Length: 237
Image (tube, rainbow, N blue to C red; front, side, top):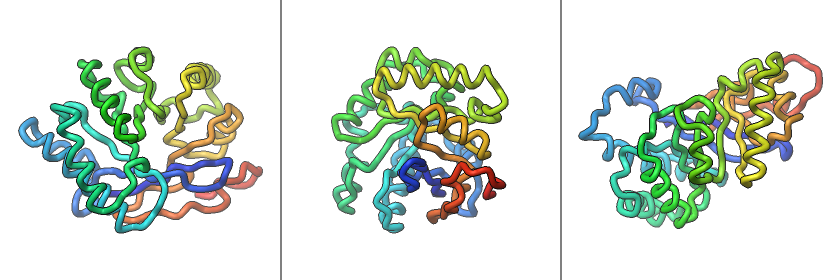
């Protein structure tokens, strides 16, 4: 696993870490996922959850741990969550610190199944999130059916948003909807101070991206203090 921080900008601190699947030699997630077929997807999904929690426990941080999961690997939400709960109990890991992300870029045909998954997760006090929001197949239709705790704006909406009025209007509209539904927003893929400045002006507080830190293989990256300033000085990258 690799870890990338999620930043709470106003408080100038790390809010949590997203865990990202890597190979044993730090190969990217796509390298691993290309080797997973339907017969092993459930075991793979269960394995990465356990690995993420165990490694986070070894790294001794107390912020949120964000884990991506594959909804098609969850054949029964109540049964499939048991191994995750068992690992939390074994390690004494507070399950309220875990956020499960599902990517909106993945084609989800059974919305009722996904809703059942998140309903079960909320029952156990896990946080829930839609990743890559604005990049996928369902968009606002997902929010009309159920509301996660958090959505993560897709990086393509964020890229060069300081120079793109259309993207600014789209993001502001999404923020209006999320505020009305009491959904927190994370802006991912932030790479420049100019992008950050626009998003902070929009009232976003949670951020993730290379501007703050790249993922670190089996470790926690540091975030430079300059990243928490919007003063007119060169980007600290």
